[in-house]
Image 1 (cartoon, protein in one colour):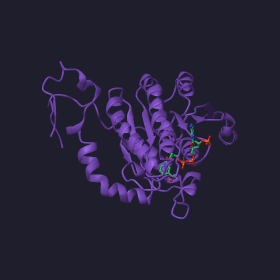
Image 2 (cartoon, protein in one colour):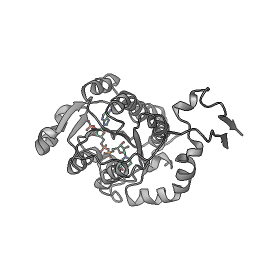
Image 3 (spheres, protein in one colour):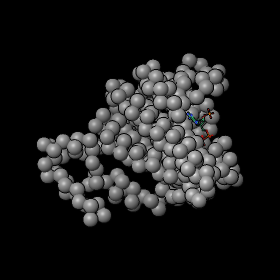
Length: 281
Ligand SMILES: NC(=O)c1ccc[n+]([C@@H]2O[C@H](COP(=O)([O-])OP(=O)(O)OC[C@H]3O[C@@H](n4cnc5c(N)ncnc54)[C@H](OP(=O)(O)O)[C@@H]3O)[C@@H](O)[C@H]2O)c1
């Protein structure tokens, strides 16, 4: 159990920071298909000024440009290519909201010999890629007033499934990092959202065998921009996700989101936080 004494005078820096995305500039990774594409459409629908469609191959964003004209700006981002991420952050300096949606899944049990390769592949994109996007764009968001960073996690972030073991491990890791980003980026005024869909009708869920129970990607897009507007951290978009979210809700509220357990970057300043102590017991 983690027990800590907190300084009652210290502001943890995490406040509800909801805002409307009307007239904002949004960047979405994996924007060309699946959930990412629908997030782009919802952003445009809600009045976003511009959406950077961050994709591996810029030609794959052509249908979005055709549909929405110059409000869509294709930009190359490959989550497995660190340079493409830092390059994008130097080009897209007007971004207010980053939605890191791109992700990969392999079906693999924990005792399969290929589990190590699968872990490496999924961690490369879903965890290392995600953290690189967050690190590259955190200063951009801060310079533009804070904005929001949204990470596509999953119900698999809080519940593992045997034949998706390595994917679940990667989504648990990205969720963990999303929690720490929420605390660190609060100092920048950046609101962080952790999105936890269940099966959603895309190529990914089809390939993983969830086609029959999958729900529409519009639920995810709606949940994301509602969470930004309302300043919420967790978003549980579809009916399967809502069930998990309801069961997890008390832990989320009383532990994950509780200010009693917050530890922001400012906590590392020993002068300001002389009474701070952490005891692992
Ligand atoms: N669908 C679900 O049931 C579900 C449930 C929970 C969470 N999620 C999460 O939601 C996100 C989107 O999933 P989805 O269902 O839309 O997946 P999808 O249909 O498989 O689409 C994946 C998207 O990610 C892009 N991508 C893959 N690897 C990339 C890389 N290295 N760099 C940049 N982009 C890359 C793909 O681009 P290309 O076209 O170039 O391959 C594509 O745009 C993922 O993070 C996923 O884990 C999905």
